[in-house]
Length: 421
Image (tube, rainbow, N blue to C red; front, side, top):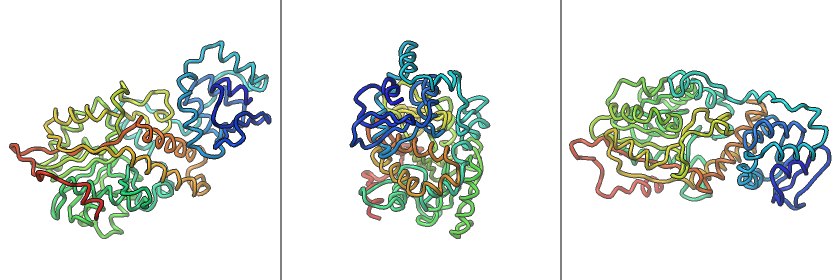
């Protein structure tokens, strides 16, 4: 079995392999070991070559990792294109090496793990967007509390140093956004995709604004409403279960969108920015915080047969930051500031993985082993992608200019003031 997997992944793996039949290969001091627990792994790879097949096997518990997950993923990352290109002759050799145990399991398609998303309807219609959001976010508030920590913040934190706490780094992010938006007492803020309410709570408590947060996750809205009441801010903060396209009660003095933009879709970009511009007063600011793809990506949508599209963010799309800036300016915004936080997201994801691994049994009891494994795999892989520059994240600050007046200082220093706070 180990030799069969070597035929799939290639020779000289820097990690070890150990299979259920007792076969082994790889260095004895490897930082990680792939555990082949079932011959079904090879059927997964034959019917879905590459990361989707491996991902399905991992989620189902047929394939596991012992040791450092990051080392295992880094070792596999460069080999996936070769696996996807396998032809019949190569798979026949894999089956010959694997032996009769694989043939006894059959060669047809296997049932996919129940954690895989299956959406219907028109992509980025309101109904399908709501279903995509529910798939990812309506999992369990208790599970997200395990992963995210007390802040319940599911977006890139801002780290002054690598040794600060996750909570302090998330607070620094909210303060950075508040500074960029120029929030002051009495202003009216709209937070699009408000999650569990972190930004609106921070802005109301620390800057005296009146805030509206909208989300398409019912469980997020329930949590956020309770958090607002417990903070004594119900007179200043409103949480709505609402699509951003249905917000009608502008104008707002400022709009934040933190970690929601990935769900918008290329077909809706002008609708999104045009709608937010109409909700802003002249001179109002928009802060769009979003994951981005590099210029060489070629396409914006996650590959339909990728693990992240099937299990994590169905219909998710990443847009290169230059095209985002052009679209914003094409809908009447003036872009004034762009900041990359790529390394910060890698640190954030590693902190979330640490939280999950430290509380693994509790997480599994809350959502089941399959879904816990989905989150562990995707967050660890995402951390490596940010570290390698394969994925980026930016904050783009724009203004709805008022007859040429932006309202910004000549030399704003948002970062310094936010981190010193």
